[in-house]
Image (cartoon, rainbow, N blue to C red; front, side, top):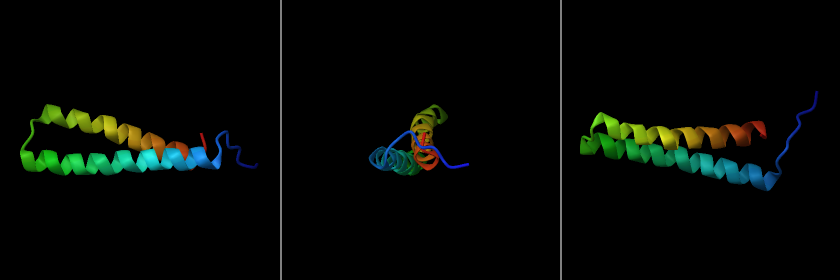
Length: 64
């Protein structure tokens, strides 16, 4: 069975870029939080960027 893709190459590239940016920004934010000794509640902010980053990469990978 062939792979169906409902987005074009430009949209795949855009979603991959947004996903990688989100993952990279969350890594930078994690390092900053660790060195700044932020409270545990601040780590909830990381969830947003990790979620958006992984969602973008997954959408680009699976053409959704």
